Amino acid sequence: MKSKNTMPLPVIPQPVRAEELPGQSNAEVITAGNADPALGTEGYELHITPTSVTLHANAPAGFFYGQQTLRQLRAADGSLPCCRIWDKPRFGWRGLMVDVARHFFTKDEIKHFLDVMAAHKLNVFHWHLVDDQGWRIEIKRYPKLTELAAWRNSIGFGLDPGASRNYRADGRYGGFYTQAEIREIVAHAASQHITIVPEIEMPGHSSAALTAHGELTCSGNPCTTNQDGGIFHGIFCAGKEAPFEFLQNILTEVIELFPGQYIHIGGDEVPKDNWKKCPHCQQRMRNEGLQNEEELQSYFIRRVEKFINAQGRRLIGWDEILEGGLAPNATVMSWRGVAGGIAAATAGHDVVMTPFTHCYFDFYQGKVGQPKAIGGYIPLEKVYEFEPVVPEIPAEKTHHVLGGGANLWTEYMPNYGHLQYMTYPRACALAEVLWSPKESRDFAGFQTRLARHTKLLDALGVKYARTLD
Image 1 (cartoon, rainbow, N blue to C red):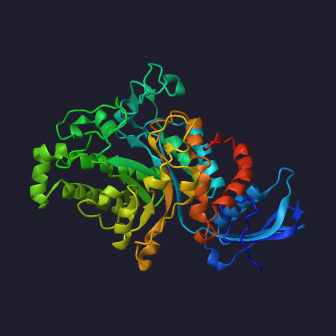
Image 2 (image 1 turned 90 degrees about the vertical axis):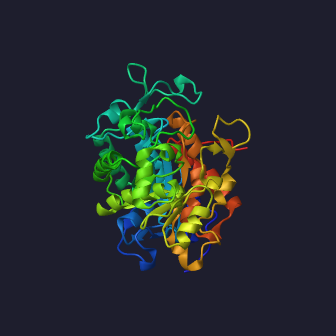
Image 3 (image 1 turned 30 degrees about the horizontal axis):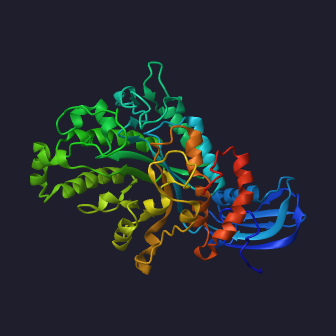
């Protein structure tokens, strides 16, 4: 068939090959059998004529994504443009991370967020469930985690207390998801062909857990959730055995709740001052022949990875897990630029690129008239310039780049409307980058299609940013 890029078709992400045909169709969709094997499990073929709409795919995910394209193509009067589309994703990991530790979002809000992701063919929801300011997942074995660590004194971060409704009757701020709610969310994600990757931070960013279980710190003293942003000394002791038993018990429950392949353990921004003066940690270093605290961190991560692997899952962590030596089977999420991803991929490890230079959606997206953000500036065009496979990765190692994602750290996003505003339309640009062929990049064409695509965002009830200058 004749092939060309489909700039006039309002499809985000942009198909691999498309051909516009004359006319319109009001026919019903007919799903057919297998498609071209080269399309894999997520690709599809779509043929729209004045009298028929036919969708071919090799797996349920492909049929689902073909239906999302139909949804994007459909005009207000219900008609569809006649065309042929042959389409598959460039990357298998197309993700968004949402931090619910700084501010809590309800079950229904998370489910709606997943629905909008699915409409953009994004397929990985990285759920940052715990951090210094809050613990958001029910763990049956340790009820104090949700009784104490899921709450703090105030909304914090200098925000208006009225910007959120997530308060307990006694005025404490926070919230958590029951295991029943998590199962419901996981099932909903699966129905949208989205995998959830849960993140349980360790050994740092653990003040919330150590508020409830202070005995697991080096000093044995509890931490507090009553703090704003920053890097804190709330870290698990790497010399005692009790923290490892505690984390294994937690991960056992987490693994039972989340059927996906990956368990994210954080591993970022670990201040090691406590370890340097802790007799237990220093003894551990002597016993294990470790030269410094970076190697002690590597020992910690490797030990956790061994447990996760024994449960049939894979460990993923932020690029700091490279420090002191990378765990044998670990996947690296590279956020401090792309250097961590280059090092990991070159060494034969899988990588997800999420560099702060292009993928931190907590940064400002416009120069004027924007709500308070954490800093930085990532406009729509900057997101569209994101390229996960950088030249420094040897050609024979580029298959280790699984894809990419954007991160929504929510210090200054206290409610769901604000979260949506910071996500869209930047996530539209990310979706096209991660799905579509690199050679089809055309920002002017993207802007034209985005102007039409906002009708779908409106229909989905998304409170997206409309002024980006």
